Length: 280
Image 1 (cartoon, helix red, strand yellow):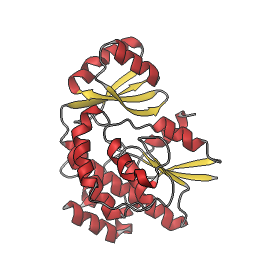
Image 2 (cartoon, one colour):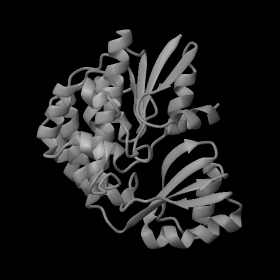
Image 3 (cartoon, helix red, strand yellow):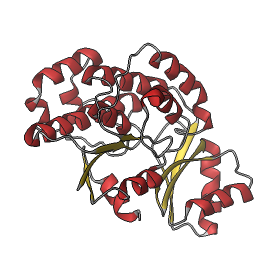
Image 4 (cartoon, one colour):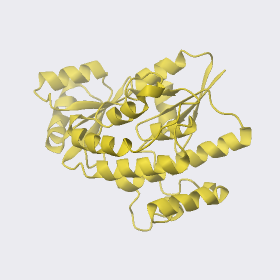
């Protein structure tokens, strides 16, 4: 059996997430509060100022809840997974699980990533449901919307596109007329995982160059390549992920080739488990 932990990204957050994990790991929670300058427990459990949906708050919150979920699982079973993978933001938890950085270093990276990404305004994203990704690309090219990029290959019938907000708004009817079952605009301020994130990617790269990464202790599948990280690619994969698509379908196909793969969603919700079930 191959044990695989998968860590969710933005979209899996909800008020109440983390539950009693905050009381289980008081020292780490205090360290997180010191880095962030606010109570992560209050944000996750009550969200009194309604900030959970803001990228610069969502990313640290999810990183922390995913990481504490992982620590709780491995503490109980004292078993590390054979592989780890994460969807977008979740990839940072996979790297934490692999020993590439410690909890606080990972939090500082994710905090900076959220701060940089929240500045990318004027963009939009939408999920196209019920249409294969090759057909989606044909529709975009054939209708003159070639400045919209594919951001997430989530499942054979769920693909997220990313671009300027006015283009995303305008292309809705094009996809509906082309036979898409659903076209769902996402609640984001930026065109994440697209060419429009290049400035954010450059700023993030400057930040990452100050950090020392440790060698991987378990294999992590990269969103950027859909293959295991190599130690000499750690920083580059993290940088490239910002403006390139999340290749989730290929990542899961790679993992499903392992001996008797057993996936465990390590974080709030079951978004990834539902996607994995659709991928052959």
